[in-house]
Image (cartoon, rainbow over all chains, first blue to last red; front, side, top):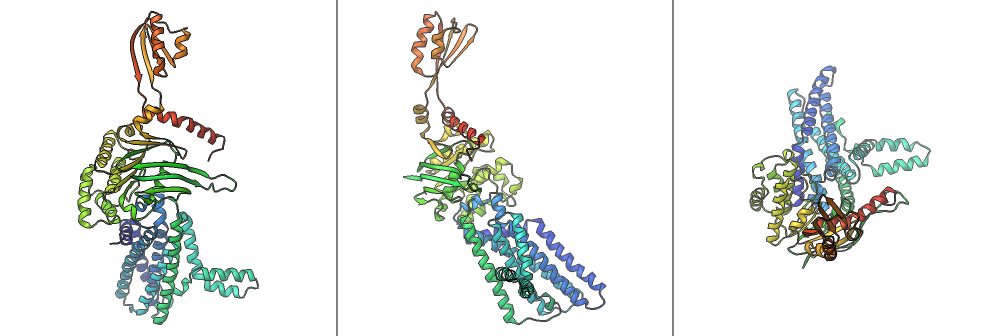
Length: 254
Length: 323
C-alpha cells in the first residue's frame, strides 16, 4: 500500500473511532424519520415531503461532517504535533494532504451510503416510489461534499480551525447564492458592485449547479450529460483547491 | 564519514510587526556528527536545539546555511527512510493501540506485513511494553508514551536516530532503560543525535557533546576534553588548628574559606596555588587533613558557558531588546 493509502486508512480509522460521527449519522436517521411525521401533517404531497426531507437531511449532515472534520484534518495534526513524526517519514507533504483528503472522502462515502440506506428503507416502508432521480440527487450531494471537504482542507492548511470553519461555511453559503447574486447585481447601476459579484461568481464554486434535490423529490430526472458535467465541474474545482492546499502546505514550517 | 553536517545554519522568524526585527533562532550554527557516534546536543530553553532538529528533518526550512544528513540535503524525503525521530513530549494518535500505532509507522516506512509483525513484537519487548500491545495510547502514562515513541523511531531499523529530549517524563528506571537502549544502538553501529537538559545522562553516554546558546555553538567536543581543556579544576583543602579569619594571605588565594571550630575548609580556584597554601598552613602551625582536587563536571562547563549568555538574554528581554 502506498503512503497515500496508509494515511487515508488511518484518517478513516480515526473517524470510525470518533463518537461524534456516529451521533451525526444517528441524527440524520432521526431527521429522515421526522420527515415521515411531517408528511403526516401535510394534506397532500406526502411522498414529496418524505423524499425532500430525506435528501435535505443527507445533504445537511454530509456537509456538516465535511466541514467539521475537514477543518481539523491538518490543523489537528499540527496543533497536537502528531505531524512531526509523520513528516519525519519518507512521505511527501503532497501525499500527506492527498491521503488525508482521501481518508475523509472514504469516511463521507461510507456515511453517505449508510444515510442513503436509511433513506431508502424509510421510502420503502412508507410506499414512496424510489425514483432514479433520488440517486442522481445523492450523487451530486456527494460531489458537493467533495468540494466542501476540499475547501475546508484548503483553509485548514494555513488558518485556525475556527477561522477555517467560518470561511468554509461562508464559501458554502455564497456558493449557493452566486447565481442569484449575479442576477441581482445585473440590475445594479454600480460598476464596483457588478465587478465584485463577478469576482465572487467566478471565484466561488457554483454549488447550486449541484443542487437538484427539488426536482429529484418529484421524480424529474436530469440529463445524463448535465449529471456528468456537474460532477466534472465539482471534481475539477476540488482538484484545484487540493492543489492549492498542497502548495500552501509545502511552504509551511511546523 | 559524518552522518550530520551543519554549516552556517541560520533560521529567523518574522516578528509579525513592521519595524520589529525578526527573531533569530539559529545564528550561524556549525556542527558535525560522525557515524556511529552518540552526540548530545545541550542548551537551555530557547537555545535553538529543537529548531535545529526540525530543520534536519525538513519540518522547518532554514533561512540560510546548509545541513546534510547521511550525505543528502536535510528534508530529502528518501533519506528519511534511513532516519528515526522522536519529538519532544510526543503526542500520538491516541485512538490507536500500541500494535496498530507501530504498524502504522512501519507501513509509512515502507515495511511489509511480515517485517512489521516481527519488529512490533521485538520493539514492544525492548521498550518494556509487551503487556500493553492491545491497549489504546490514550490509556498510556507519560513514560509509556515516551517509550512507545522511541519504539516508533526504531521501527524501520534506521541508521541515524534523532531524539529530542528522550529522557523527559521518565522516572530513573525509565531513564536508565533509554540510556541502555541508546548505548545498544551505538553498539550496532547506529548514529544517535539527541538533545537534552539532563547533563548527567549526557556525561554518562555521549561520545561528544555540543553546547548551543542563542542559536550558536559555544563548545563542542568529547566530554573529557571539554571538561579538561575548558574548565579549571578547583581544589579543596581541609586543615586544622589554624585561624583563617584575618589571614589576608589565605583570603587572597582562596575563593571560599569556611571555619568550623578547629577545622577549616579552603577552596582554591586552581591547583597552582596548592603549594603556596600548604606552605602558609604549615607556617601558621596548622595540620593538613586533606587536599581534594575537585573534578570539573559537564554541568560546571554548561553553567560556565550558558549562564553569562542566558543572563544577558534575560536582561535583553527585560529591556525589550531581544525577541
